[in-house]
Length: 230
Image (cartoon, rainbow, N blue to C red):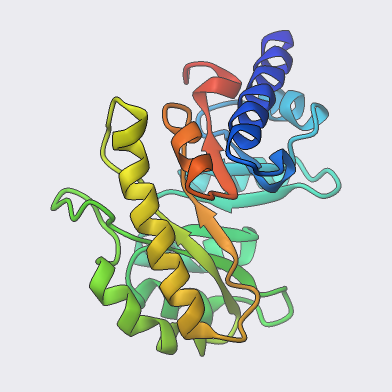
């Protein structure tokens, strides 16, 4: 668990260095610790180092963790692929969902969420590189669906998420993040008075510096916090 403490310190320095280089406040970049396949002891160790946001990909594994570990102020994010038959559990157990990739999923999350719970924070997944192997709204499609999704009850549109294809250089990595940022700005202008649309969920262990340069405010980091998955 000492390694997790060191890893988080190193990660925070890395984020601070990148933020300072591009004139940003390091505190404007939140860390989501991607805890899939890691046990509760590892999650507790990260929590003890100030991490409050945890991302899970696999629903049944996540539900077990959520039910067993309920410290103050913990925030659970669902970041994995969403099957239609899993939307009810996701809607009622997570604070955030980053992987809403089609209208049907947004509709089901809306209709199946307990109305007594706070609105579910939703990021729409964009297929930023137009890859046939990946899910997500196309860059053209997303502009047309926003007005409809904005009206769904029980969910709150917070922003966009993308997982670009692997690139090696900083300049290459920045290109899809820049595209997502520009798309985010166009949608923000379209939504006008919706001040809750404020989130870019982009950047992982291998490319978070590029994402920070392009104004991400949520980075999803697993390996560089917890080490390799068991």
